[in-house]
Length: 379
Image (tube, rainbow, N blue to C red):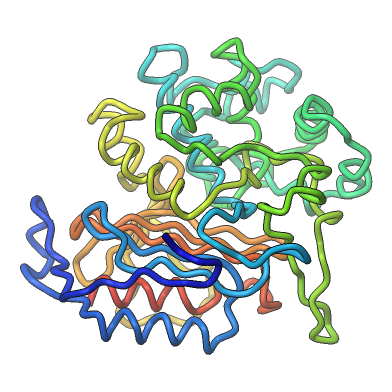
């Protein structure tokens, strides 16, 4: 068992080779205990606050917690972290389940499932567009009045209905399929489709069909009052211009949405990876559909060229990147006081989960430890 800031380390060289690895992946590599210890020390030296877990072939190679969860407790292996946008993976999985059950179609239009949109949106935006951030919907957090309105919502129904009402009143930034723009609004509407197609609330569907079958016994959508009082839950500490960290719970919504802020632990996220890749949550063909690239991604127009250029794709939920001829598939998340990263390495059978209750004030630039973990695993 881990203490609040203890570690589980590999006791021998860890062969980073998996059966079924792609032909481009190197046939053998090893992350030695020294490599893992160096990564552990690097994360500690960088002032990381949170928990992380590296898993190879279903076994923990490094499990470590650092810093405080809140005034009452240190971060530990059972600490619950707000997942921010990693939550989108649960929503995408639910959509894939409903497509598999023939209750939803990837080509189905938004208006097939949700009413109240003008025909120019209802008849043109598809489930595929919503999943791949190509719908043209924007980000409610940037819309006038949204922050003030969302601060007044005090129930799950108010949160879901409030988001949807704002989105109904919005306009598309581009024609569906004509561009790519990361969209919290799009993923919220996927949650509405889950509710309408299943006949359950979004939250109940995810609990019953994603969290429970994956064995994610601690993962749930918790409310702000629970966040304030439950010592298991890591408070989000946002950095101020002064460099001080302040508790940012009250900058977040009453409850998470299909676009963000379910709560989970490192161990539960590793269970999610196993259930998703092992076809517990989806039939193998729909697992493949969900985790394969759909839309090629690249730097914004006008950005300086990168040599070699990255090979990145948006999947149906995750993003996937080719690193050293190996696929790295997952999602990251960020919000005031939160920085999260979850990645699956199918070619070598690794999973990395890095959950932090600080935002590090780096202006949207990802913190360095996810890349360090990726470099360790893909070397």
